[in-house]
Length: 136
Length: 136
Image (cartoon, rainbow over all chains, first blue to last red):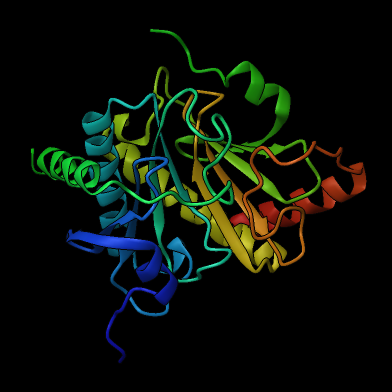
């Protein structure tokens, strides 16, 4: 059995913040939106329904834990959750904080324009706030 | 307490196929992709994490039931699952069958171009096949 590793493109496009029970929680390297990704630490799974029932339940729990914390940390108008995987097939779930007037609002974030680098201080502040809300 | 009703825009843009335990299962009026929507029959819920834990588990079960049936009914390369709600705030979950070369592949379906009407025979055939796979 191979050990779990995040897909190369996910590893390049995002940074690991922490591990929750099932998933790696990663921050996208794109400052346009507070954009998180959950990656279940399972090998060769592309679709949510390929997870075991227990893992599906864990993933749901972790999606909602993170989405709720992201909402409280940002005060966003709407949380967007999506599992697409048309490019990166390894199962991963996007959780994004959206606000009126943000880039491509009310359209989706995927495939829109080009990533913008985070300012280091802003990233540290956002990450600290998110992790604080995740723990509370 | 108000009774559940699908949001006006959802009702206009999609057609109800059946009710599963928690959700209405609806087919989008857009033949470009096999595109389903699950609408939990709950009032005043915008985010998945606002559902009760039991409803969250039910929703996960129903998403996976439908996604798996859609994959088997269509043989699609990838199932896309998303809960955005930037326009229609009533909680609803999109489940879409995607294939290489389909409109906007590998980008998302949301906000892309204009809906195309279903041919009545194609719609009937697709719906029958989906419901057959849902029941099996």
